[in-house]
Length: 269
Image (tube, rainbow, N blue to C red; front, top):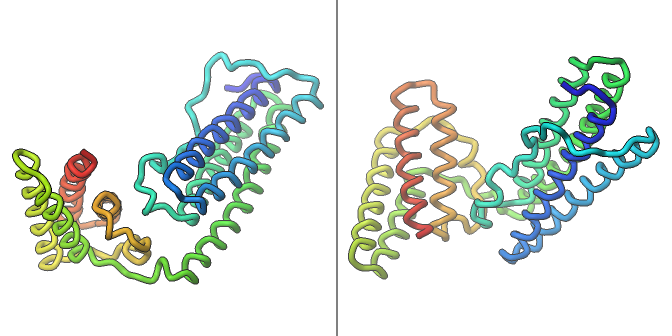
């Protein structure tokens, strides 16, 4: 429970700083991965969050308060949703803005909760103001996300529609090619993973899964990289595991996801 204006603004300041640190790390990674397009996206998000932080600092000054370390730091609301680990080929400006939108939405929900449980009118009004600011941020980022989506469509990067069975065959070929450059235990491991991929492909042809929006927007060049392909297929099976209503099909999707996690470890190694 937030008990004072000083605590509320100190918490707001901490949340904005967490977001800035997170976006800086992502911008640096995109720089290292030679993705200047996404580096610019995250740099824009950094500037956006710095603007939010400036507003909080201004509020602290106007209220004649000093930000103090929180006695109990909150669980971080900023979540990069695996962006720091996912293969850069799977990242797009649309996905980056989607992640930013969800972070701002979480912040809005948080401040709405604080407002509803505030111990005083002063704190309630302040939390309402924070929630209103976050809602404006959500609207801004949603506009950027729509622009990014249309840019993707115009560029043709989302033109190809995927098929799990075909993607699994492509993965099997990648694994067999890599096995051909290996020997000993590594060769055996990669060959076994390739056989599993072919078995999943055959099963998907014989008993198809339900519709999956993820397959409608395959990033350009993704299937050319075994690591990216592994991660994409894992996302597909995890989504299917959540969407499928038939218990047997859901369990099959979850089993395939487990296989892909093992495959990811081998490919990364």
